[in-house]
Length: 234
Image (cartoon, rainbow, N blue to C red):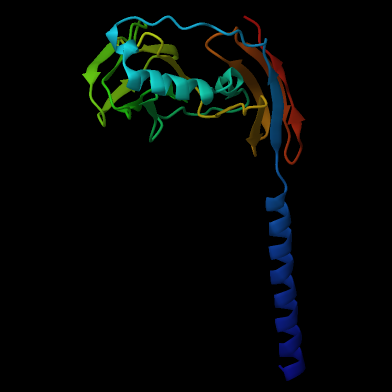
């Protein structure tokens, strides 16, 4: 084989190599997106009712004031869950999940998980906190815990698990246990997004502890956007 033939063969191989790279990059650049917006009734201001000597403590009043300044919109607590109808999926326990106790509130206020997930409760305030649930099928009480304490609790019940603190009556939160590993949450504008869902049919559910669940069925196609919005009602 002459030098010209060797050169031509190398040139062809290089051309094929870079063509594959370009096509590969192009295919990765294509995305299958499912997105939409969640609408909900206007929030109503609720006055807090405090009880016990601890609410007259200056430190607690300071953190409650900070809590009001950094108030999170309820729409950010909306969960969008996708349940595949065209194929089977396994909702394995999450590797990590936690709820913080900070500024006399639970963070996050709504936590989505899958069954069997161990949730760590972490006290970051400079005073005692408690976490308990009276939800049937998931009753527990971790007791009163000081600053820096981390207490795990495995959540097995599906649906809503309501959380409270027996020291601070204004504190509450909700764990939402889903039978699907595919879920996301709305942003502050109520917009949600799934990227690169496997093509097929899905049931989408918009979930919030204070509103009725809303669902719809969509068909996801490769490299094609699908828009689906939800309006929540009480």
